[in-house]
Length: 164
Image 1 (tube, one colour):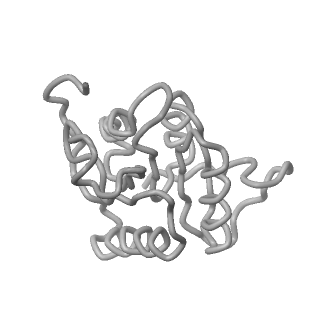
Image 2: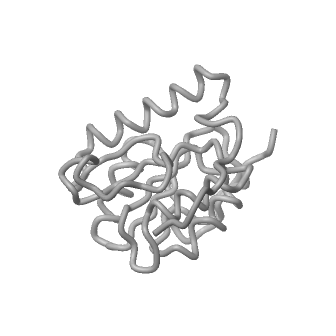
Image 3: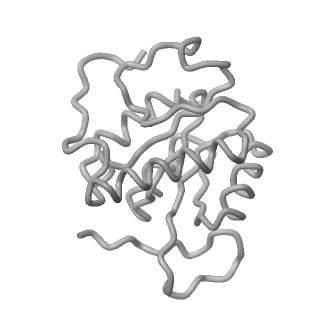
């Protein structure tokens, strides 16, 4: 089993010592800093470790380094769509089984543009509500535990066409 690298800084400026208690780590990808701060605050208060990224360039490297338990991706980023980013994540063998939650301002996932493949394990609308966010993350984490820590897919997705 691949050992997860401990992030050096999460919310403070000093490096953290080795974790004594394992807690789930959530990678949040959101370009709007106010929404990112709200989600980070909610997740930290609920006891999750939080990693954050604001553009397409950061999250893939962060996910490779820190091996998060769940990834939350905004469907609309300035340099890519959340679908494209989630698909890129799913193509990497070490991240293929990490559940990805899609976020969108659309009132329903039925109203949102159709993703090129089913890349989101769950879909939430903005503004994010604490109860809904925490419930969905806990459901995904419980599903992983129930499946022997195996995540949604046994193999990474294969790209069948352009992501546009």
